[in-house]
Image 1 (cartoon, each protein chain N blue to C red):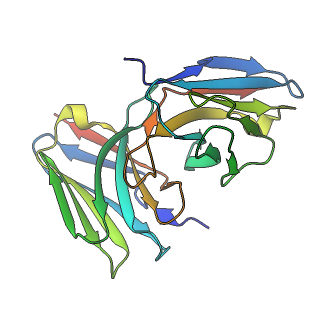
Image 2: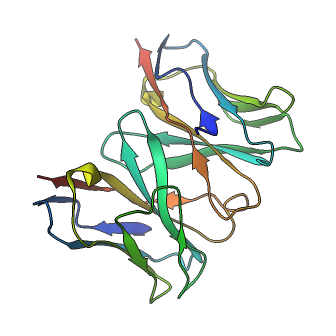
Image 3: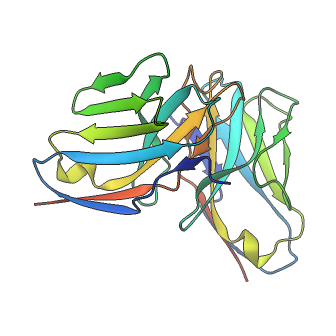
Length: 114
Length: 111
């Protein structure tokens, strides 16, 4: 019963490097989300997807790109990492609209940019 | 512009007592509210929710109250247990396909 799985769990990057965070869900959910959590800031939405092949910008999309080529996967990319992107990243999914179905979260990816 | 606010970063309550966590919102288009609980090194987990057509929803030891005129909601935990020690996030949604989260309140339940 995996739910939402995030890969990797930890990563350290140098400024300017690129990387992709992978989120996979096995619940056949339509909606998927990427958040970042920073001290004192709560959870802020980066990008989200309401179905395979769709993506939309959230509250803090700059510096990130996403893709949803398969329904079960949602990828978050950093093309040129910056120290300001040091954060804990959470992926979430929900069956439908959040008010009908609560979001299920992964355990997070802790990313440090040096 | 913080549309969902949790003004208390932390709260300490004795075991067995009531814990009251508060949340305020500014967007009048929000019509559904949720509480999530988060332990260290884990993702948030859904706790309880309430629709704007109600003013109270109860689930075991957890009750959420909504005051639409004041744009305020609160989560009551009775009785509080040490396992309730966690960070609690309030979240809200309206017609958009996304949630807006508050900054969280860290609850410490002491023995």
